[in-house]
Length: 163
Image (cartoon, rainbow, N blue to C red; front, side, top):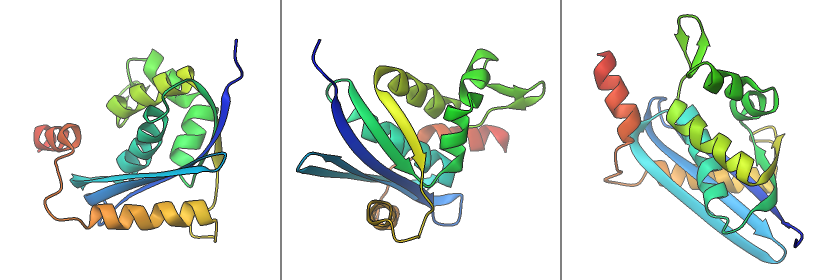
């Protein structure tokens, strides 16, 4: 069995207004190779974009890899490393008896990808001079400010149903 490639990933996500137009940004590094990924949606949340950044980064890897993923999202780091997300999943995406977990569509994908790859999640303080995180933040703002952004269909549908 061949050794897994070591990939370093930085991710960030955000929404202008939260909820509002949102974007995600990814910087991936493998050896001398560097790749950036970004995208945006017309109406979404910070947490959805943070999750989507990690998902899109891990989906971009063609083979199982050993990944160090840096994010400024405690939501992601704590939910995965402390086992909260797997507990929510085991309870049918419920956090408590009457409290549904938010963003189950994205958590499901992220947990699948974390099982496929060997992912070490590392929290980094946002806006603290970390060049990978700062670049991702720039990508988020650029993506969220694009015209004619597509719908975050799951989010928009759940908002319409709640109204």
